[in-house]
Image (tube, rainbow, N blue to C red; front, side, top):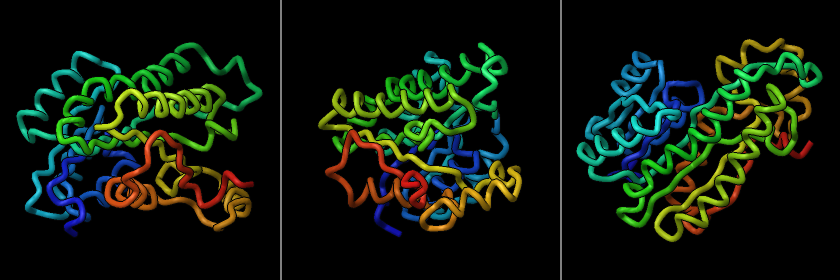
Length: 250
């Protein structure tokens, strides 16, 4: 319980399926968790209120990743409230399913929204918070990427491209922010969330059959990987780590 005691962690997209699991694991390990949200304020507040470790000052904050001015304001507020930020998990994202062969359906509005959220938003969040992360010399940024970046198979072609950009951004930021801030990407495959439950069971069964560990990754699997990076894998930076039950092998 005490491995992350005293640490403050912000999870963007914290009210979502993956983000909420990461928040829960971080809180269980003793961290004070800031549940970042865009539009799901009620869910974020409810999550912050039910997280374990009553001694921690969990909270929910709006984190509009495409609004750089608002991110700068957020950085000041977090400094005033906590005076530190040890872990930033960029778990926000935008996408929509578009069949790969249907290029015409991949419209400019969707492309711009994905790139603004997934790529520019990830950079803008780090840009706004990197000084606070560097303050104690042990800052950690974890970008949630996807095996779509390397397999080129995902919800749509531009989503795959946006996650490939996140991987490159991770490496570049790791060089730029060393030695006081480490930057790593976690690359899951299909994750067991409510969103995954919308898929046809035959599709899920086929996915699991092609996965060496024969199961979906869970949000807590990803949260455990974040904790490992923060507590034990402290010589790791600038890499993309699959957390996909082996799916990228097949």
